[in-house]
Image (cartoon, rainbow, N blue to C red):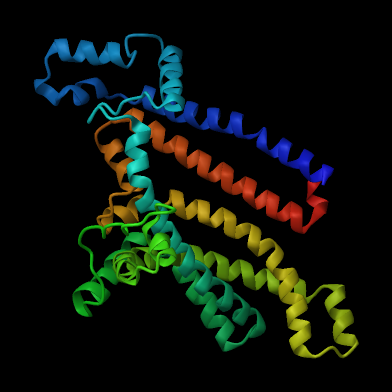
Length: 333
């Protein structure tokens, strides 16, 4: 356990330089863009010079770039950095939208696991067969097809043609909230009416978002299963005449070790990869907020969203490292 503790401390210490590096890169890119965000924040071409000067002072834009960066980072950590478009704290805006994005990522993760794991295992068991070839092509299609193409195709198919889903509004949360994630709270409180409403609204965007990641997981699971199947320990069990059911159970146990860790990374990717999906399906989440920030040169909001995404990915990497270190102690060194 001491080795695991030291390993976690070393990994946790990478948080700080990573977060600083990400925010600094985004800030520098925003700083060198040949645009005038202050005029956009003040109201466009009709903005008065007095309003422009006031905004410059408020956001320290009349000071050197390093002072501006310190102001932005300090404002993020204290939640005092205001969105120039609505004068609300940036992280308050993000927090109000986080539930939608997190719930969308949950649905996408559900479809990711539901399709990626079993289809990857079937592909490995049917190696070099017609089934294997079909599933590998299917995974390639999932990975390579742009998400906006799949989104509009599914909207036409499930919403316009079959009318099996809804794309209007966001269902209210159940009356009794515990986790503040509506679909989870509706299950805990047995509010099945609200659960059905959440599923009807989120299953299609979640399915669309999860398809690409499911293709990746299918291929990763297949390769991991085949690699575990070719190990000496598996060959030894085959030579002993162990029944196929026990043999496959042994192989699956070893094959899922790297798969479990990759799932943590994929959930982080789903959580940070929602902008296009949220925009097409009209979901008021963080991804849509980020795209609006880009459109309106809302650099404080953009840096806040990027900072959150950096935390998500760093945390996902840490969780993956912890899982792998617990399962395979050799990686701690």
